[in-house]
Image (cartoon, rainbow over all chains, first blue to last red; front, side, top):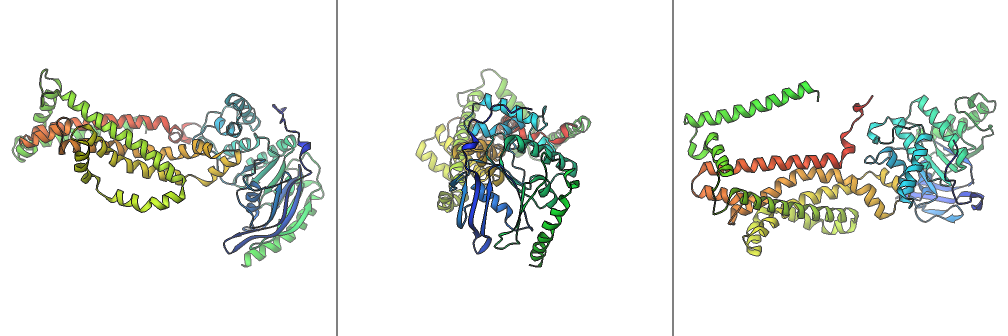
Length: 271
Length: 267
């Protein structure tokens, strides 16, 4: 399905490094969530963030989204120091965050409407996205009338419709059953290849991380979490998340990352 | 509810009403209760019908419809003003943590004050015409709506707010697309109570000092030891409340459609 209304902004004008964290620290009161965290994400890269529970992965997304401010260090997104909400980032939250008083169509067209597109254009665009995520015929349903998987698809269309250069996903598919999840993962990869967005993808599932990402960032256990490992995933694209695990190299990388992740999980568990 | 069950519920509701009225009528006829105090359903219902349908029957020089109209006017006035200001102030304080902290103790004190004691002040201040009743209704309605609007704004889901912000919402857009709809269900559920209180304001105000209105009719009847007149006035008030209540429910259904519909409605 071809994309309509190709984004006017020429993405080649954006810097080669889309997101850059430099010695970031984050504290909530006396509790240090992140400490001395630095990494850079080149434009268009699909990065998975993994680590033991409570290691601050989601906080990294909130920092890049501009919903949290770092206590130390600097964060650049799109070449500029971020000091408020990141208008270049779409964020698919872990929890259900659709507007319950809006229909599927109204939810999906919300982004363009908020950014000043006329209602008619936004609705036409939203219609395309609803079809793309496989929800044709559900336009006038309210979120309470949809299944969990359907709501996630609406959330995905809602996040992607603005065609923003950065896409943040926080355990977006973890609550879904295995089949729906694989379906959503493949759909996301397909749309990502079209949109060429830079993706930060938080997950607790290492298999999902390797299957989807170009690169896996492994976090240490909190408090004061930071990077423990940085792994490049050299698997061919386009990928099918259900088949990619049978490609040689997958298991090898999985075992390497898993050994290191397990250490951190044990550390977190011991606390 | 399945149709068969629904019919049974209505049937039992009706049976209960008939039993109650019948028992009242019977007890009164047999003098188990004193009709001087408790009247008799057939008598006061007849009186109400007489007021409503006997041509040329006047109360204090005006027809019952005039009195009904005056009371409704006062009720609607107090209701509309109370809701408008309650929503506006509740919304404003819901958005501003600073001002809600500053004003909190005063609002608590004002709310704890039994507002009916303000009625004499309103009469002194605004006279015995409709305005003092509107003011009393307003003072009752305002706080109910205010607290609900305030809570509605405060209780809005953080995730939904963050999501709307990330999608590009400005502060004004956030209020329109997220806070107002979220507060709406709270505000609307408070309207059921508010309508009742607006009527209380109007009727009690009339009861204390007025020259017209249903409250005045009831107070006149009481002054003449006319229990049937008191109950007839109450009966008419009951009908009014039921009609208004249907109106509010209809409004609620329309404005928060998204809440009514549940998963079971389709396969």
